[in-house]
Image (cartoon, rainbow, N blue to C red; front, top):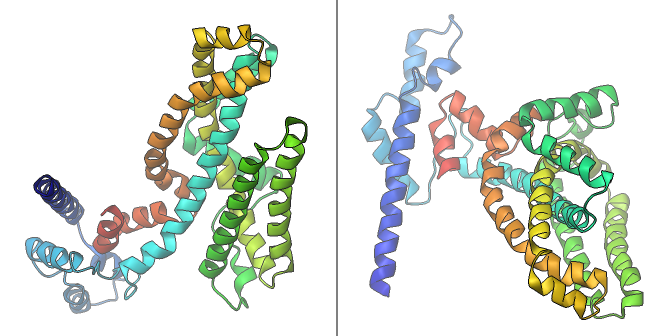
Length: 356
């Protein structure tokens, strides 16, 4: 077994090395370098450009620079950013990655839950005008061009209605005299929200052991109480206004991604439910005299959940890779936007750090 694990580990190392080599030389093959971009001013003498190129190590041959980077990488050093010198690459990743994870995980989890419940109900009550309208809406959302859809959401909710900010992570004017930075507030928001979700989950699980006539009330309480506690915590906090500023900027991109991802989950759930309802065990459950809600939720929906759950797992990497488009549209400073900006200016350490 240890031999097998060793072979697999060696294969992983070789694959990673080849991926890093291909990525590094493709980026380096672009015309010019960051020194040219940083010294576009014609008044800057060529000697200063050469000095900057030497300081960044760009005067060395590409192969020598690559092996120096690899040596530092496998020692845990990803280098420093050319564009934000002397900021370390690992610091940029630690700053940007949580923003991307919160954005996409929030949208995917909400869209999964809403899409599954909606698809389940539509399949159960097939044939009405609500099902037809919902299905057509789902198909439209599923096939819509994401950049166009994002721009339309900004035009509607930020420009026309003026309900949410048009983009970015925060409003700089609200942070001029802030005693802490935005990352500190964002991390606290993430932790407090995660704790509230854990409490809601525990309350929902415990409510399943309560008699059916009290179950809905117990679930409602288990949802309202943690949410009210979370709102009260930030309402009474000295950083409440700063937290609301970040939240208001987060709502529109999360809403856009939720609507975009919801359609696929709803359509898959509806199709899976329709196939499950034709199975023999559904007829058996009804023949036993089980209530329709029990047949729907505990027999049909649980079986129909399997392909939907598989689709969610496979969609998470695609959602993160699509972050470049979404974060660019909403100017959300996540890992996707950092990658795009670094690739444009040939900030090789940042690109390599994000990809590997």
